[in-house]
Length: 357
Image 1 (cartoon, one colour):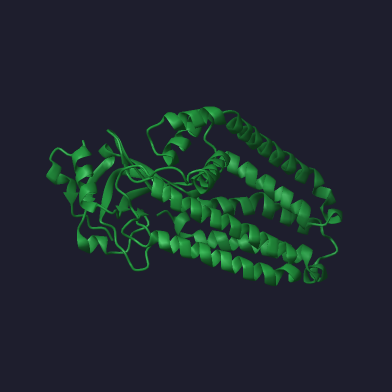
Image 2 (image 1 turned 90 degrees about the vertical axis):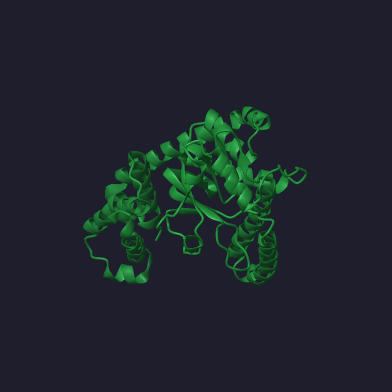
């Protein structure tokens, strides 16, 4: 972990202080009382805060440094300044904020063009998905990457499309054959309980808030409806997508929450020591263990030769050194990994003891 990762709380605190300080200064009665008569340097300081410092702390917090991110965050800061600072105070620097707004508009226009491209190629994408032998949760994203440039906006749309597909268009589908992750757990029952709780909470809170804060009640209603759709889709994605093996890789998905394609050649060894499995999983371990009413532990952990890419919800990608798996047929799954691991000269050497802390 780098010093940037270790200092994440500091970057977040500094970002919150910039936002809170400027909001208090321009949008509260207290701020108006301490505002000096010469406001030019105060506004200049806010401009530096939103165009330079806030983007810098945001990138430090996300640990993501690219020219595009810098331009986008600085432009967003200019847009926020237009809403935050009264126009009479911002007038000397109005040209700078307009440049930022135009830059933000250009970025939004490019993203809209990507969305149009996505819609244009949708028939071909659907055709590729139908012809693919892979589970839809994998074949759809691969087809999208083939026709449309990889972009965070496209990843989000792809993720949302999968959610609505599994929530509304997958109920007549028959689950694929394969090793499942959930049948020996109470995961489905837990998800159904969550749906019931959200529905009951929605009815109660919406009825109570409707007269007091109608806008807030509508926002909460929409968020709860979205949550119910997501839980239904997640259940279906888990049911319909057991672990899939082909000649080169295994395709592992935990509903809509995470998925990964593991090449056999990238598996260094399998860790199945009880003492290791019952430890708390480290941050460099992707956990493919379904939630249950009681504490559960993985059946084994795959140690990877190189960091393994895992796709999380909304298309977010992270890399992990270990993959923890709990399935309904652990012995069969370990045997399949052992047989298919072409990198192991001796099948018995695929099992190892790893001192994970």
